[in-house]
Length: 125
Length: 107
Image (spheres, rainbow over the protein chains, first blue to last red):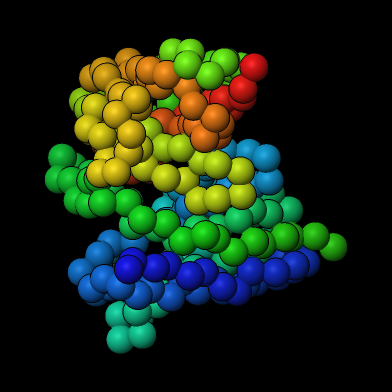
């Protein structure tokens, strides 16, 4: 069955970097656009990044662009999130997911969601 | 960015009650709206997409309606297993944005 398993979370000091991984199985990884979504403790959901199926196109919210970089290795069925200059407010559980989305009226993956269980990142001195 | 305003932020209801949650988008999003259920400690689960389409395997007591800027999510008869936080989310354009969530508790 479809499975997304995140790893790489942990406790890190402010200003340091961390790379998260998301290993996929049970579907044709190279044909799916994928996202990162995070959730701070006791808070709501925040979209973090989108990468196209082939890795050519990447999208971020303005608040994270420049510090976070999404990438993928389709030969390894793995998605990544490189996080630099970490701040206490980046403390959250980070999920990788396949989500529906539209760009300029062209929609993909609607109704075909699946999520990983998440990996927890704590930014603290 | 499209802001999603969800209300109420929490509610308490009894088994069998009808529960209604509203979500308002800051600009028109057609019907590009999801509703998610998140049980504590778990990943969100998609219940409804395209504002009113029930995801496969989701009980029919869950429903959604609306278009444009105003949307409604309904649980027709609340069950104990429905205790969770519910989120709306627009996917009409990037960045994807979520409502603040509605925590549903049992009275």
